[in-house]
Length: 328
Image (cartoon, rainbow, N blue to C red):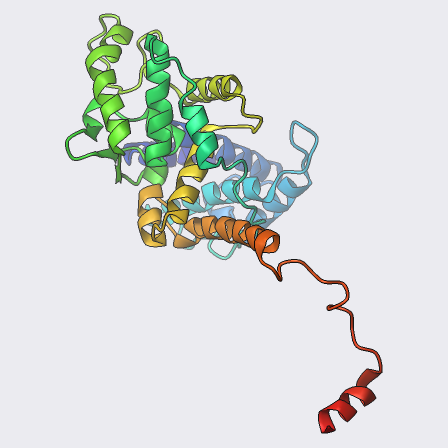
């Protein structure tokens, strides 16, 4: 079978496992570009794919400019390598290959930036109060913002929620479509539950417009499942309306939720479970955020937080004087 046929077989297998449609679309693009590169190198069969050919492709990606004319970021290259590794593992597991050529190909080291645009508790309160809850769409928007902040879920996970996924009595939500196909249960705050209860009873039926075949919790003005792009647009609108100067995205709510919980004393393991991080190292980045803030507060308010130029000046006399003082 050709590489193109194997790629489609792999994607069909991943789809049957419940992989998100956006992830499938991205992986198809990654693998088709990889196959195109291999064809240019004279590699047509799966058995001819080697570690060297994969490394040559990754090197080519680092040279190839993006649509904006910049070099492709390390993170983007690693995502493409992850798609290739998944494809190669599947070929081994399905007996298309005897040895995985991607196993020895290492990921490039990624920079470790801190989360950006984390809002303070006061700023978040200001943003949450921005929607006009006297209108149908305004009330829905308030529910969207409260759920994002209360649960810390990703925007795709929020949009994937069905009405039955939220237990308002037990105050939790089941995330069925988590990253990497991993589901989890997340707590939902008391206020968010109260808003969802009112939304489901009074607002959602008006948005449905007679449609009875959509189980989605959050609906657009047309009665269809709300999409991530729609969530991003309504967040931007309310951020501007609230007077915030920061660039606010759906992920801002996730970062702010995690940071505020950590400041309040939440444990890393609990936070990892809530956020759906596979590794605790992904959660530890929020510890760095709080430590950096603490260092700033220390430098500002501690009596010894600032450098005293006179006190910090090195003593004169060199080592001889130090030895003489030591003897005395």
